[in-house]
Image (cartoon, rainbow, N blue to C red):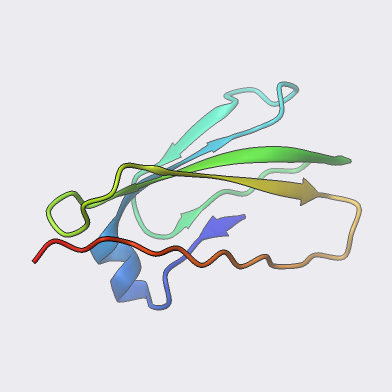
Length: 91
């Protein structure tokens, strides 16, 4: 799974880190990714909710971290879910 902006340049500029909270059956349940690409790969089965917390570059974006929930389903052929966020930029 991954968190992306419209461009790689935006990823590097606006996002400072992303926290993924995995199912309790995984070792190291909370995984923090501090560099682009903000992605995580694991092997598992079934489906479960993954809370995701996105932290922003505070010099550019005046937002507290945003928390999202993503349903991860290992039994499907794969799909992508897009969530549009509105951010408050500093001037």
